[in-house]
Length: 247
Image (cartoon, rainbow, N blue to C red; front, side):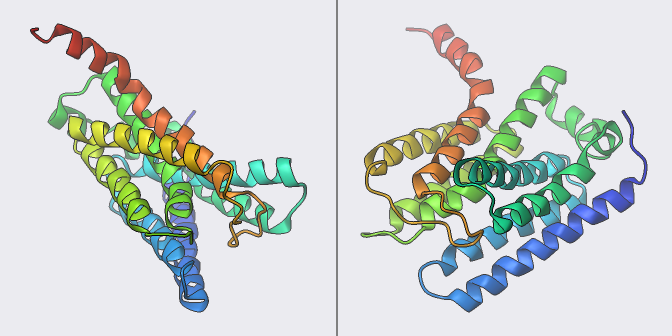
């Protein structure tokens, strides 16, 4: 299915991304304190989507739709588990305004279906699908991982910052078609799972931005699942490669 108004639809997504980035910056400035770093990091995540989509980088549509999917998922999860909440509904609607305009084959032709980058990296259709799934999964994980990793907690914030940096670096390596990017995302997935196992019974803080009563462990679970989705397309090929190594 090919939709029309490609430029106008992209502009709508860009407007919503820019609006979200500005709001996150203003909230961070107004709140200050330990929560401010979460909103500054979110502003950076959404600003990257804005810039990539405006520059029409081949992976921008995947990345932006992943961010939008994260917001929609959190809104739906919150509405299902805690009942009607106007803040959650608005949060989901904002992300729907990012996601929906990017649908359709025509928009895909403008980004990932271009031949220039496929020829540069020598990828077939199966390879493109693996990269698509991985980029979307990693992008979906980023906003929730920001909250899980940078939320105020007792002790040092270094582990949380390191986890977030590891995920970002892994995503960078992934879009550069480097295996170490996938490896770093795999480490981030395991790290998140171990961290959640240690905190599952103790975390009681809430996410204040969207008026949600979802615990940080619930938010971390969304990040964990998204990271697992990002890594999963490469598990079998990596295992086959390892089996072929000389012993």
